Amino acid sequence: MGQIVLDTETTGLDPAQGDRIIEIGCVELVNRRLTGRHYHQYINPEREIDSGAIEVHGITNERVANEPVFAQIAADFLEFVGDAELVIHNAPFDIGFIDHELRLLDAKSGSITSRCKVVDTLVMARAKHPGQKNNLDALCKRYGVDNSQRDLHGALLDAEILADVYLLMTGGQTSLSLGGAQAESQAGGTGGSAIRRLPANRRPLPVIPATAAELAAHEHKLALLDSACGGECKWRQLEA
Image (cartoon, rainbow, N blue to C red; front, side):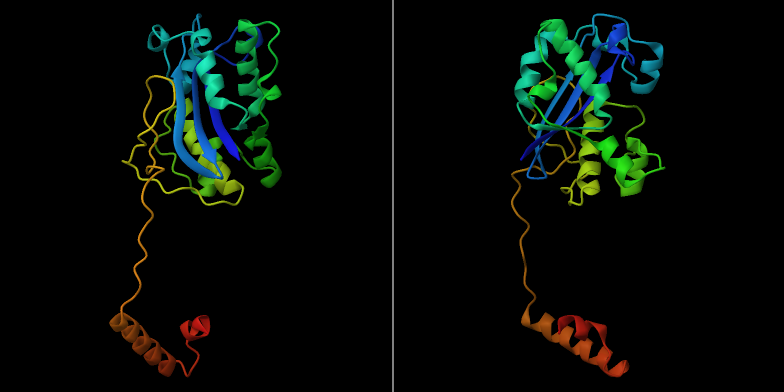
């Protein structure tokens, strides 16, 4: 099943007051594995960014002044999303902004939820951890996800971190990552850093069986342990 983990950054908190999207970041999951495909785009909101919002995400008016407007990137964004299930933290916020942008293009445009199902990880986290903090930073700490590079909010980085949190929160293993490794592929968008992931098409790790000498040494060590503990060697019990 295809899923898109999505995050946005905006000029403010309320699209009804004219606030707009200034950054979209998405990473793709297929069968609970990161594929390496992602979408990242800064957007000119055609209005000023609130000073309070700049303190949160660090994106200034000058940074997005020469970026495309939403109308210019809408087709690429919708093509990347397709009909995948969207995984979003505090989904009503992001969905509200996306729907607002779509309505500005076409007043008759329906909600993005008419084409995509949505999983709200904030709702999920509150059900699993009632009475606790369930923002993204708190979940990273709870599930041991590295968010050391998250000094400011950023849509692509937050989407990548949320993918790790979502997989751990739903009981699955996340894919391996290396701090310096960068994914080769990027679908759509301009700017932004590449995802720090091992390539999706990497060769499988080799399985190297123990040699006869190594097996003999292992057996000798177990015999010594078994003798020392009066036949109660736990390794023997596990192997049995």
